[in-house]
Length: 237
Image (tube, rainbow, N blue to C red; front, side, top):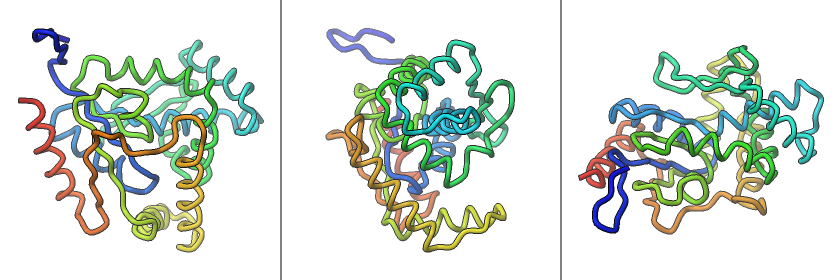
């Protein structure tokens, strides 16, 4: 970072995108990062991977101490590895196995919500997230990027849409992958995730006071990305 008078400023900004499940954060963050030439960090994928590791180890997601110990072991052994995927998204490896697809299920979505509610797990993974974006020139997306991970981010965005719109998008995505789900089940999952993320005691989902709200219910991906990019470029001058 460079110092300008009493203000410390990064050469390139940190872009923090928060919002509820199914708002399109992953797709929009990937496209925005690509257009800006920034690194993409999907923090939700990291929590999903911890949930997957816990499931495979027979550890209950509700067991905070054991999930925390598992996360500590993954980090200490460098068993949780993120990498830039060819399509511009972020891939994840667990003990050398690419689990980028395995973590993209409704079950792992709920698992991520549960394990991320444990303070110990958040403490373990917080340093990893901050290290990834400390120098700027990065787009991070999750639930608490602008409120907890990088409260000093130069650009904070809160992306949302109605529960019905988010459920429809998620339903279309899952059925396109051949998964057998109903719209009603998908909507119930979205509403359950919303309640867990917003109601948890530790780092609940909320819009930062200085975040710009984007409701994508009636906007295309291209429209959202275009408006976000203009805002980032304005803040970068």
